[in-house]
Length: 70
Image 1 (cartoon, rainbow, N blue to C red):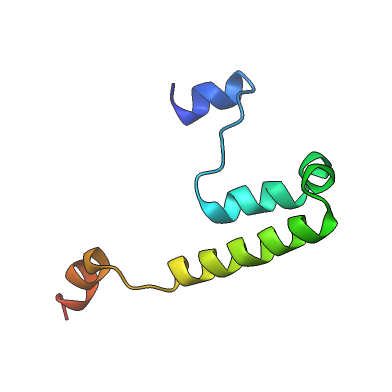
Image 2: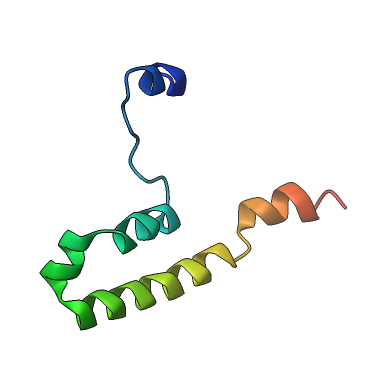
């Protein structure tokens, strides 16, 4: 189904990246209660660090696409 078809049917997509997944996790009382406050906060902190490392790296694709054109 296309995005529009899913939207019309009220089908919500899963998060598309770690950042979106973390945003959802932060609002989950179930996960907070299941893991406990300390584990939940530690997990979130480490996953936010992981996301920051991932999003700030320059990939070979980006180098080939943007830098080699200069």
